[in-house]
Length: 79
Image (cartoon, rainbow, N blue to C red; front, top):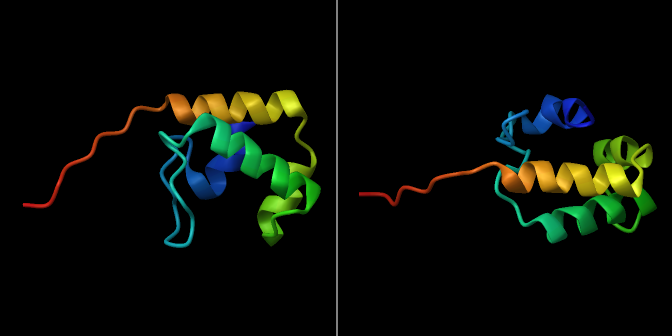
């Protein structure tokens, strides 16, 4: 499963594991796929993401975007 590589920083549950890592859970599928393609092509720069995305096929990117978009998240407003 390609999501294992993502899980190191973003978690298998899509919740960032470091303060500087964004949550992927519930992210818009089309947006996420486009950003992964930008990392892969070098149009978007991030040292780790450029390396990780380098080995992803278009199908891998679509699958990852679909996986993380499908994770259900809940929101609770502050009281």
